Image (cartoon, rainbow, N blue to C red; front, side):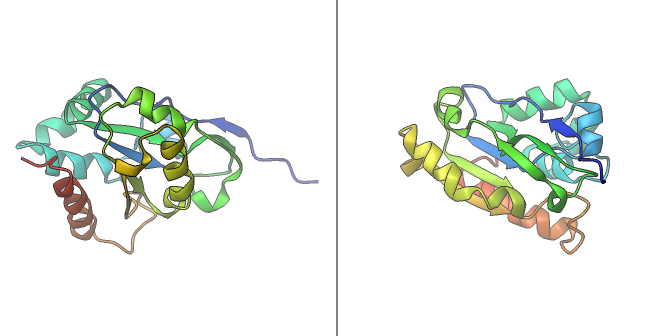
Length: 180
């Protein structure tokens, strides 16, 4: 008899009234859950991409404490959340997610009244793009919120170079006027 994977709880949303773009991941990996930080694995390129695109001094952003980085990101109009609130999973791979419980994505409208876009960080998150769009439509804001699929910033996405990921993320940020 095999033992069931543990039920894991995700991280709370990092959103505010000025959030224009929400980056939706699938579910935090082991390192992120342990640290209680979005994109907490040292090889995940999310923070490096954001700092490179949204700051004139990426090195300073990357050395900030997590709470400061989060506030900096929110000040840029970018929020963070995941499509799953909880799931069972061994390890960090999305392919191992089982019995996932979705987050209340309809609540995005209440948290983010100026929401303009959702950026799905990777394929597993993007598999829920239709459900996200429906949740936003049910919240009476889906027609004007654009949905984007971006390459995962995870170290598991080794088929994309940092430069390729940066370019894809830059295009989305540029579309929404988030770059200086």
